[in-house]
Length: 102
Image 1 (cartoon, rainbow, N blue to C red):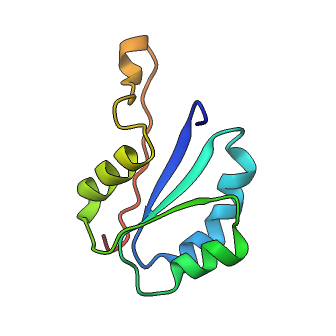
Image 2: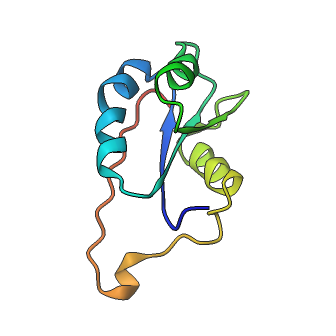
């Protein structure tokens, strides 16, 4: 397991993955890249399998919603117990969530 992971919750975001995932892969260092697919119907998973073989895919058979999807993904990759609140260490937290039809 990597020391860090970038976890992306996806629901029918194929076009966004195709457009933005190359940049994430380029700038993520040694972090594991994980896409948790929230039961998409737009061939997002096929795109990931065909064009992004280094990305770990977690496929859900049903849509767990935003918070539920992230909880399932983090627990599924073994990071669920290791989330760190950066404010405890005096670092300003910056989190960007893009809620696309989840």
